[in-house]
Amino acid sequence: MEATGTDEVDKLKTKFISAWNNMKYSWVLKTKTYFSRNSPVLLLGKCYHFKYEDENKMLTARSGCTIEDRVIAGNVEEFRKDFISRVWLTYREEFPPIEGSAWTTDCGWGCTLRSGQMLLAQGLMLHFLGRAWTWPDALNIENSDSESWTSHTVKKFTASFEASLSGERELKTPTTSLKETIGKYSDDCEVQNEIYHRKIISWFGDSPLALFGLHQLIEHGKKSGKKAGDWYGPAVVAHILRKAVEEARHPDLQGITVYVAQDCTVYSSDVIDKQSASMSSGHADSKAVIVLVPVRLGGEKTNTDYLEFVKGILSLEYCVGIIGGKPKQSYYFAGFQDDSLIYMDPHYCQSFVDVSIKDFPLETFHCPSPKKMSFRKMDPSCTIGFYCRNVQDFQRASEDITKV
Image 1 (cartoon, rainbow, N blue to C red):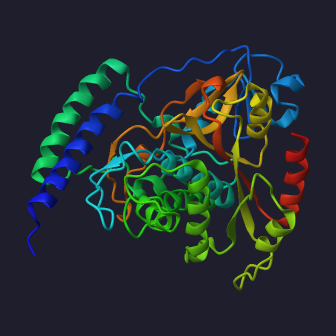
Image 2: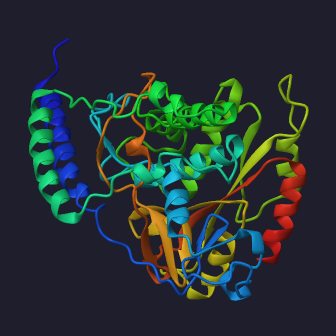
């Protein structure tokens, strides 16, 4: 059956919006972020101090770094490597259409889903790779300057708009193949880690079959009355992530589950029940759990009294980040310095990457530079995430979170 005139107009409108958003959201990445050398930086439970001091000296309790072996003194590169190693999921364009719609991009509406993906990805990184893991190629990620990026953005907008009208897709050639990457590792453990690194990223690909990709998350969101093009709040995304993990049938994911708090309350017995649920053969221990806690930190604006609470949460080794942001703009908060939050920004439109190919490029899934935002600008609605490997880990985490 031929498409009606109205359908053609809708498709053309969608393609134009995609091209326009590509220009609009491609401006935001390449801005410099400044860090003080006099204050510690916390990143998902790890503390970095850029000022060269006696490494055995304990930092003050006010900084949130009271455990000596978590303090890494005087090494900016270690912080950069740790930050870049986190999985970065952003707006994408020209991916396969979302079922029941003409959408081939999530520019302008998918930022909270992307922030949720980043939080879940960090939980899976902890589960399969551990907190100490960093990507060996992290420091090879390019960080272009703003001037060259501006001209590149204009060219990309023009090419994107022309391709959108003609129905063509820009193909991206992988810069580093899997064979080349694996060949650099002599240790079997490093090879296995790189395989899991790629596997985790592939689960978030922008295709209908990707377990935690945008297409699947939107499908789960339909049960909450959401559809492609709608704005998703942090609490709704928490329940979507829970459903996505529960329904994932991949054998590697049978040892992990997700619990969403009810009315800001985590019922320990319910969490332990989920962790102790029937395990597949070969998994004798309790399941790991990602605990998601949707909260509201104030009325219309965030109450600054919660600043120390948020900093305390991000200082915990169990924390996998916060789905938050500014009003109508979602970010993935992963750390802080002084009264500024450190985050990864999904508002950057990148080209579709086919993660089904064996050697898909990894570079666009890792953010080259962090951003900072004053806590005062934070939207009060957010979802906090924690990862616990087993029941004992959850019980220890509960005690530490209660202290915070």
